[in-house]
Image (cartoon, rainbow, N blue to C red; front, top):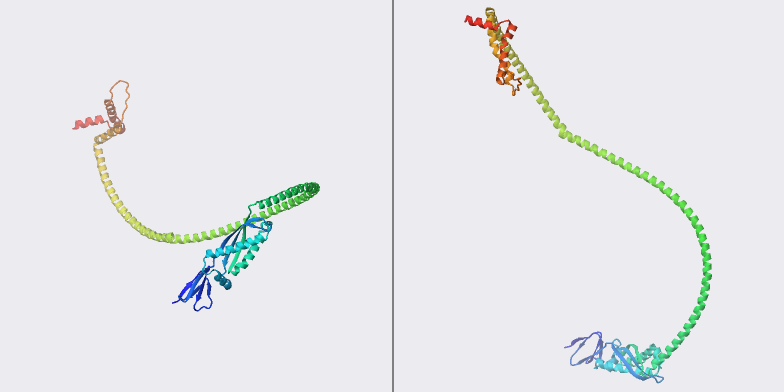
Length: 429
């Protein structure tokens, strides 16, 4: 039963045996393998970094130096010919064995190139040395199925101090050249500095002259520009003020127009409000008032009729009452007249006796009227000279004095002597 085998891009599979006249090489893929009749082998395609150290190698001039280079190599899996060569050389070997073979090959080529070049060539032109090693090594390694990705010269050193002496010679030469160059530079610098100073002074004086002339021209032009600017500025300010006044006038006119429109709208709103109020008053006041007026008029008519009827009734009652009172007065008058006539007859018959009787009937009333002020008095203050009675006896005495004077008053008014009349009446009895 066949098996399905796969490998990554950093590996290649080689299938040999039945059904294959030549080995089948697959780099980074899959393949069917029939057990027992076919064999599967793998070869790594990883990039190998090699540090190539060549100690104490004599150069073209016999100077021993040590060189260290760094190279990256790998088995080329995309080229079938190179992959077949690599399989012939390295199939069944580990990656470390492949690394050691490549390292020895590169080290041999590196030592060979060192022997064909001087120390100065290797030291000064490392790129040339690396290119020579790369080209020579690539030729041999390609035959093994290995491609050189890159080669770089990492380090050059020696145990005899040749490189140091070479560096010191070169350093001294450089220092000498530097001192000479510095002196020449200082000399040239001084000359150039003097020439430059001369040129600077000439340029300065020329510049000062030109600056003065330019300053003069600038002041003249500035004065002219300032005058023109001030004129334009004044004109602009006047134009601005005029335009501002026009703008303010337009704004005021617009504001007045707005106020007129607002006032018209307010009047319209007020008219609508008045109409609404009139309708509201008509609905809430006028119509109820008309109803109330009608009600009051009806009530007034009814009251007028009622009052008229009551007045007629009162008038009739008053008339009847007046007639009754008149009749009563008439009857009373007739009775009083008859009484007075009888009294007159009696007075004619008795004369003084009747007069005395009338006086006696009236006398208590007169005395009561005399004493009435005293009955209404709350407080009485009496002042006495110290002679006569005091207190209530004094008041009583004064009242009695008034009463004793009554017969004299009656006699003066009627001509009837009360004392004589009383005595004659007593005798007749």
